Length: 266
Image (cartoon, rainbow, N blue to C red; front, side, top):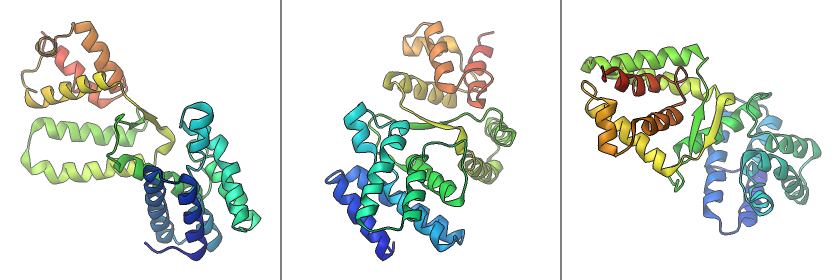
């Protein structure tokens, strides 16, 4: 990864600011890498590219103050506290005012997905999204939840893939892989519907056990048998499945898990 002289100074400042927080430093470098690669591919003009690269390095710069003031790293606090910190850093580095203003705006909106304007904004959100879904360090098991029940393209692709998986035809593997790739592309383009969640660890374990059970015993799986295996009352397990799959009518996963299990009760 090559750094411009100006970006290199920003990276040095960000590393100094985060001190020994390797996780934050690693995250900002990864987001910068994705943002730079996408920006070059899109052939952004020099000003937009400089704003994008700088914002990518500093996008989470407000997280330290957020954790100190609010005991939270939530996006809304980062958006509030990040721009002033970034402005101080860029002033010391003698960045021009137009760049500083745009970077402050991007940092102040990088968790706001419903009013994206400008390629630098779009790419910053996409780069941050890509790094978040690829990381595997999560003690808390963070995940991204997409509210895409009304996005017909995604729903149709999911339904087709689920049908293909259920019918179990081996020759459909390549089709399923391509379908999964298309779903991923649609999700990347649907960041306005995403929210980050931290699941209850026990409920998360129950959900994973449920999905594994359905995968292993799809033809004969029943809610009663699963409840006996997990030593849970049926109404408790039903509530957990609904909560962790988005609820009936909202998620195709619900259709092939809870509804399927209930159907086998008769």
